[in-house]
Image 1 (cartoon, rainbow, N blue to C red):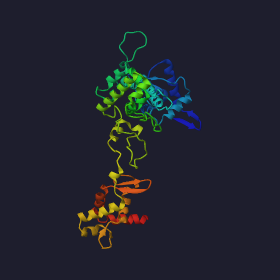
Image 2 (cartoon, rainbow, N blue to C red):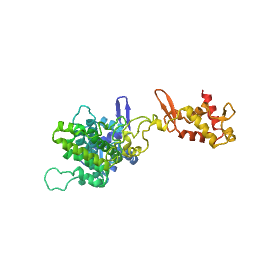
Image 3 (tube, rainbow, N blue to C red):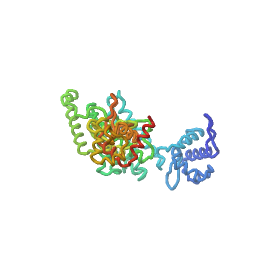
Image 4 (cartoon, rainbow, N blue to C red):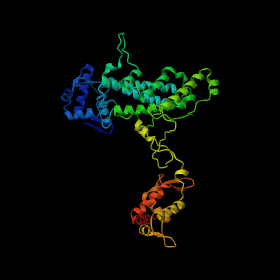
Length: 440
């Protein structure tokens, strides 16, 4: 419907007619129906519904009521710009595509911008009052997002106060929004209320010394927002190229009382009291939706083959993935989990083989023999099985590679697994050796 050649663009009759139709309706402030669009453009119903269903028309039309629409954003752009924006959004779901209200769409955009601003300000090294800026933008972002949700579920009147005062209508508060959407025991609600408390009552206590503590609550708040925002809008909060996370920095210990008092005077007692209160709240509410647990660190890696970090989740995977990831993998002491060198584990495999099986069984399964003619597992047998299973390609339950100097270690679990493989199928070891030796 839109032809593009280099930097030029030629509009089809239907796109040009659609542009003129929307301009006329917006200029006259008149609503219109789907049938009106079809009559003006010559489209079939499936064409319009495909455009609308994919969110390609979100910038230009909004559903009002009784299956009617209103036009917007067409008076200040050219027909070519109009066509370009339709073309660019062809494979992109627009923010607010699933919203009927123009106000809800606008609030969603402002909400996303304010949360991004909160992150940018917090992560700016030169900014000393980053926590003050963060709590302001964070609370504003949540309030706008929750009001967009309320508008879509209960109508635009649901976000306004019932007041008889003249002038501008007042909207309900952030806490009112929370009460309408979340249950009283919701940790998402508690997290936002905690940060809103800093904004309203304790912003003077947000000193750099407690940044490491409050950042745990901030981090959970951002993860909650990302998850809730994407669930509602069906659009990613941030592009995949952006990390978008708050770094958990600073000491997680209470700042020394003497230093605090020498720096802040009498107000130091209030800061220390806030710190203690935070600790108590986190201990009694040990949930990732309220605050990042102390025994967790966030690590961004491409894969977990090194096996020496807790890999929680990526920024775009949301709070549920993070919650699950907390219990998947923990850092371990190699000396306890993988204590065996190659010569030791080969010796132990042979000892256990003769403890469990008679020599007749072993002659059928094993390929090599010692000087006395006894069937055994030798170095080549051992490496062949590891190569077949690709265990030495990464750090895992059975194998660990020390980088400098390069030393390979093995776990006790490998002994039983190795025996299970070579004894469970009589030709398994022979096949593994043939494959490995052929590569060599």
